[in-house]
Image (cartoon, rainbow over all chains, first blue to last red; front, side, top):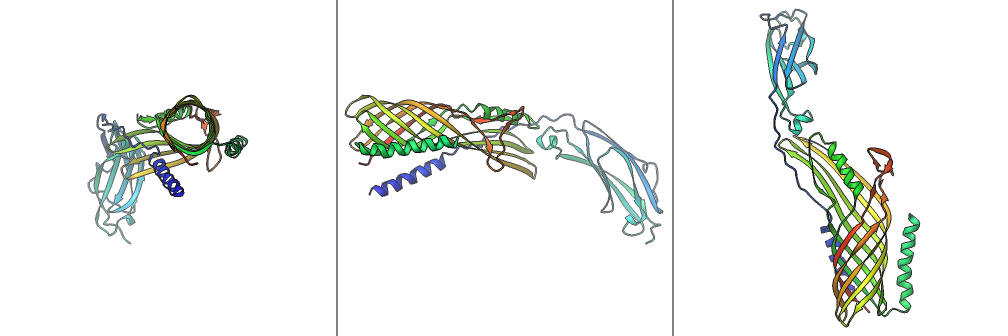
Length: 145
Length: 237
């Protein structure tokens, strides 16, 4: 009888101790106040050229300016193939005739990812991006593989 | 420090064995209640962690009064004198948090105290059923401190766990008020515990938990504070 009492008592104590382990899942919820949204300007040397042609290679010079924000990444693709990426606002890169899948007109896409300036946690740690894209039709007619 | 633990265990054992020769009765007590905690260093560490957040968070709780419970074996040596030896469990913690629509950061500290010790209880005022007594107790205190920090943003998350422990001696004094039945008693007890701060060490690496602003200083646990609880005793023989 006494041993049963002890076992019961021990069981109760173990249960109580486990149930009483400190825990707190409270949250401090904040509604972030965004600053002015970023304003982005982007120019390239291709802006003034109609149907730029890639004979062997072509240098693309770009200049990105972001007010109220910062550049995360510039991602450049020809068709769907990545050809260049950078986190600097001014620079240049080359595209080559072999970057196109087939001879003809292909699209050069420049995706610019930049901070959202929302002051959210994701924004502050650099994981909340907005993006704009530039598109250029590039003539790869001279692409001979 | 291990000498102190050994000392406490020997004292507890000696109390149980030696008093067996003259014991009038033996029993088991269970006490459940709450306690307050000093924990200055841990509160300070939580403040530093909060400052390191990329956005202004808030300390949701900081070592509030929380649960304390104990189990003891009792020996009534004389009508006015009783000795107890046993185990006490106490827990508290802290939490800091920042949450918005894009994610959350939190830091949880969970501190658990395991104490082994012995006490002497002297009856001040007593009658057939009511008894008010004064007690003094010495314990060896083992502290486990778990610190979990996590950031979850959009679909990305990162979590770190750090576990620390410390050993410290502590002593307490208090009052106990019991209503006695034939083979049992029930009542309340309350007192004040003084804990000598125990230096925290990482459980895995053995590295000391240093003050981020003073690398010469080791942060400590400190369970000093008030205790209060309800108590039940069953006399076995």
